[in-house]
Length: 530
Image (cartoon, rainbow, N blue to C red; front, side):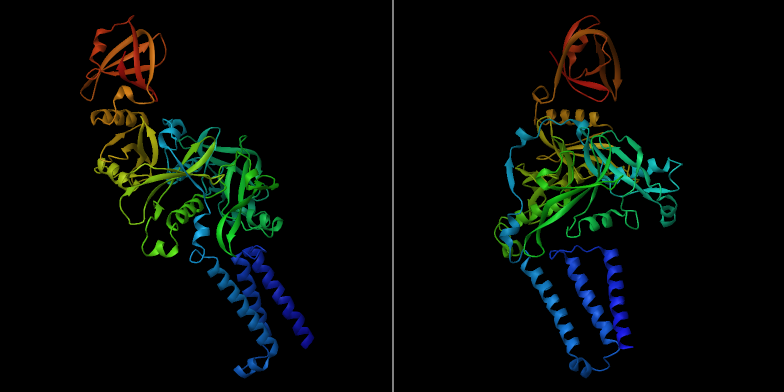
């Protein structure tokens, strides 16, 4: 009977531990907190099963040598875990944490060129999710079986800022009836044009977060890489539109559990499950997100707050800087960069500059551009449309007509983008609002000119054209006279505000003219006649 009980005990421990491991998937790695938790639970499980038939009183515990050894091992594991956590913390290793990321000082005017709004994300993630769900709702053949994942990874695809996200099974029952065929499509949203498409695949997605057993992407990774500690995964597509899971592997630089960066990246084909393991420096350039935005922001906060030690970051806070409570994304040179402002820890409403951090390489650039903090600029923009109750998205800091400028979208109560706003960073009371980006930029340039911040003919980004007038039409827009001009039978319209460019009334069809203009989406705004 005793032998039978021992066999049953061993079987029960293995079974329970196996189920726990299959569900929670801790990495077999001393840097993994999950492994230490797993060890503690296994020891407690063994002690519990062993003590159940033997221990009735406290004296029984004192008399049982195996039980005392087991308790000692458990306490040792707890002490090692607690000690490792303390010795890995910024309290003891402030200098090491502060040096985890290298920050390069750069010049705004040199690096940040005049903005091209075709490459700027005009939406935030919440707006993208609304568009994705709306698109899914229109797909009657799929909407009853699938839903849209909340991932919506921001990537640079064919030189355009887009968000991509896979479909997921709508419920366990829908998984049961569809998992044999897999997930047939993913959603792609152009963040500049708001075009939303459901991309149907020749081969379905078989490996995803919504699978329940061995095709679950986390389980698939764990069984192939049992020692890797993965950071948050992202869903991306390559230049041909093939879906992949980008799986960053954590690297611990301080003690057992501290100083996390990324050391490797595993790329998994979402259709076939095929995986390739790369060192971080060998990661393919089409991959955009290896370092999550949250990790990059945390690394910069270590850099900014721990310059003079941990105690100073809590007490005196001399020279301490931190990122503002928000971030956005920019596509530069076929990479995605995280943008966020940098301010003092004192909680004032101004920034000392901003940082751009590369999500593939961890490169970090600091730009010293003092001015209003993002939330002050957002409040200023919202104040211009307070009667409409619109809310501003977290802005981007762009070069608009040579001026550091916050650009943001304004959304209604349903989360839909209704207008756009530009706010001058140094004089954030200067706000322009437009129904389109072109209107907003035109109003902003006029605002700069009126306030003496920049002369219209000195602004960067203006273009010029020379030709014969083939058509000229007058109109009154909001009480102002405008002349709309076409040249040499080209299908381009040039808008001349007569009150600003009175010389236009001297011109007729057939006359040769040179126009300096700001490119627009449908109409080019003339800023000078030459």
